[in-house]
Length: 514
Image 1 (cartoon, rainbow, N blue to C red):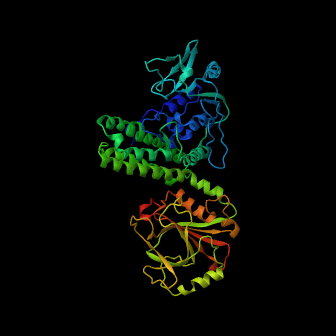
Image 2 (cartoon, helix red, strand yellow):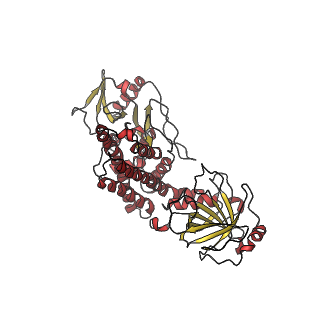
Image 3 (cartoon, helix red, strand yellow):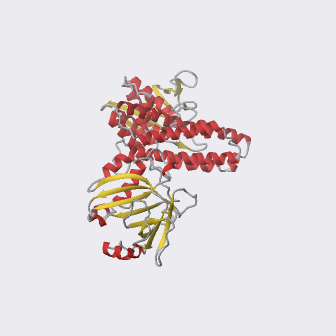
């Protein structure tokens, strides 16, 4: 349960705008459709209390809800569409602020208030422009009233305003059912592309926000005095994790409503990840960790890192199922499952970097000395091409180590000229071998040229699809510490258009309901 629902000034302003147009919208529905439910802008000392700092949310909201709109901003709005999609947003107009007055007055004359940011303190809180006179603008604050309890007059609005959102004519209906869910999944896809994304000075968005919070928690200089600790508590909770919790709680409410109205529409793993994320925040709050204490801040930093991973898993669970369906062209996924394989030993021969995979006859000849070794009992009794990076990330070790071999019983003696990797059930916490024996296993049917094509894929169709199916199920991949993959050669069945693929996953008891 959310500790205290923070105000979301931008959402409040849009709600009041739509109510004035005779088209009221529920807060949770608006949070979900606008992308607010999946965002997390944060930076210590940065003005991120209001999601209007994310320009893509502001620019797209009215179009999503079925209205034409103009978004005026100080700078150029970047194209932030997911790969392969066109940005269905109005072009921002980087014009002098004073030239915006005509747009404001035309909107007010049509009976449409204007959503504005930067006019009221504390900035950049969003407000609603409800009138104008010769000396300035009349605005309502986030709660429908000005700071002094009445509509507030802003004379220097042209110097202070950082953005305007003007509603135009109605162009369509608000998304509902499958269309609403598709809108939410597109936001999930977009927010997966935020690594390195900044919002002004000192703020990050989603994947660039969580690391900032971790670094800040571990920066002793930022917590050196009692005054700093007191101020930082607000940045950690009221202006940080409380807002994350509120955004995700509204999203969960909207998704559960969709799920009740359209059974089978919403990804069950996504709902589980939302529940888990909100539970993590609630437990951290209940623990009452004294943030002034270094050890407590280290524990909080671990929690924030876990929240980042859980948030990423939520996003994958929302958009990956549709993404996989769109990518599956020219081949079929015959089956996809998760297996907790036994402890075993992979025995094989290394391939030279860049060396082509041996033809079937050559492969069988290379592995012939292994015939007769004790079986692994895994049920995966085919030849394999296993790849791993030694527990390092691909940015550190770009070229994988590739081994041609088979699974055998744990502890099997290794013949001369061969090498081995052990696979175990429990994670020893050390990067690299022994790797984990839990896997996602998929089998495919399709031409060699299609399933092994690299154009348009991170690796190829076999790798990408097996990985993406696991991510869509919110199954954790132990990257990079225990990450490995293997192509399974099914050609010994006599069918040269069937393929298998193994992808390492975290020990299955650590995964949720797979």
